[in-house]
Image 1: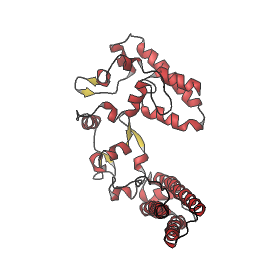
Image 2: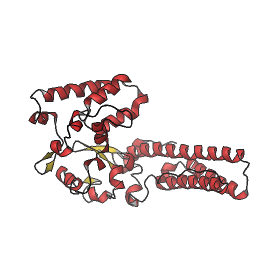
Image 3: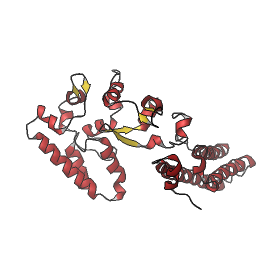
Image 4: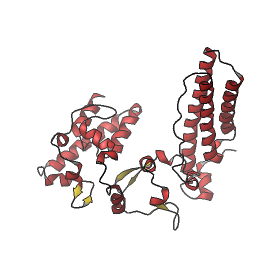
Length: 290
């Protein structure tokens, strides 16, 4: 008998089934990573004719942990399963180091110590989830890396996971520090303005070349705002907002037509959030060339 995401909802409430799907996807990724690393290590050790008992013991332990997660169907204890797969990776690294061979450094545990255990027990992989909040692209990973705890933004007092902060409170937290530039959080936007993204290099946006700062567009009196195209007319011609809308429509059409192999590029452009507003010509030139 195989359970389904819908079966989870019956006891845990609507939406819990989505957690199951997320767990299965993440565990598959972690399993493949550990299994591929184990196979790679075995090939390297065989080639170097390294067969000491301690080396073999490390590999046996790693294989056992990987198999244990598979046989027990790791989603029954997602946190323990993730730690077992991480331990397997470390065992493989120990075997390679004992043989004097190069080992890879395993990335930080998927949840690490950044997420409280009572949250991580269910919200495994939340650091990889981006959500739209107040028309902004909220990236959990960035906030966790900055030491922001779950309880800073969420509460279980009245409703599980209830969002505590309103838009203004989010912005006050973000923009209260004067010792850091906008690009420390808004890296994608800064890259696009400069025409230097992970996927293409193009001409800088005219606003960047004119030394227009982020604050010039996004700071209204003392409040940081997400500018709509209509507000561009404050400095540009009255027909400029319509031009911005045309750019965005053109970019969206290109994105809709791209095959799935460009998923990373599509996600980057969408996560940047301006749909080309920070450098429309660079994005259009890039998309036309794909």
